[in-house]
Length: 200
Image (cartoon, rainbow, N blue to C red; front, side, top):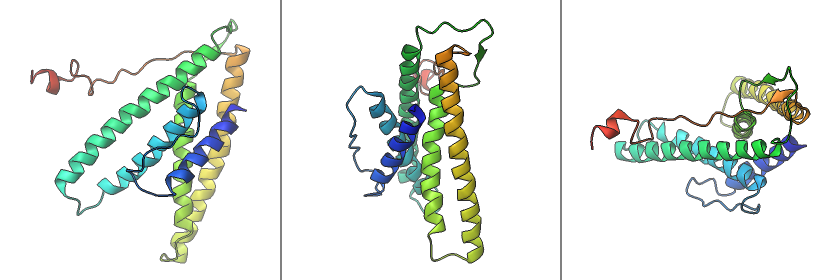
C-alpha cells in the first residue's frame, strides 16, 4: 500500500538524519531522481531539519543576527516543503487522471499530498517524543506524561495511515473527486507582498 511505503520512507529519513543530528548535513537521498519515493524522502528530510531549526531559534540566548538567518532559512524551507507537496499532488493527479468520478462523488477537505505532509511531520514528532521517554534526567512524572503522549501519537499514526489509504481507494474507485488548489502564498511573491513591491 502507498501509505505503508510512505511510513517506511519517512521512518528511514528521520533515522538517517539523526545519524549526524546536524541541520547542515547534506541530504543523501537513496531513491532515484524523479521518483515519488525520492520526493517523499526529500519531504521528510525537510521536515526533520526544520524541526531542529525551530528548536535552535527558540534558544533565549541566541544572537539576534543568527536568529534572523535561521528565520530566513525556515521561510525558505517552508517554501520548498510547499513546492514538494504540490509535486506529490501532481503525481496523484496523473495517477487518477483517467478515473471518471461517480455522480455523487465527494470532495475531500484536503488533497492527498497535504494529508501525507501531516503523516511525514507525525513521524518527526514520534521520533522526538520517543527520545523524551528515554531521558534519564527527568522525573518519573514527566516521563509518564511523555509515554502517554507517545502512545497518542502512535495511535494517530495508525489512524492517519488508514485514513489516507481509504482516501486513495476512494479516488481510485471514483467515490471522491481528485481536486487540487495550488498554493496562493503572497508573502514570498515580490509582486504581491506590499512590503516588497513598495520598495521598488
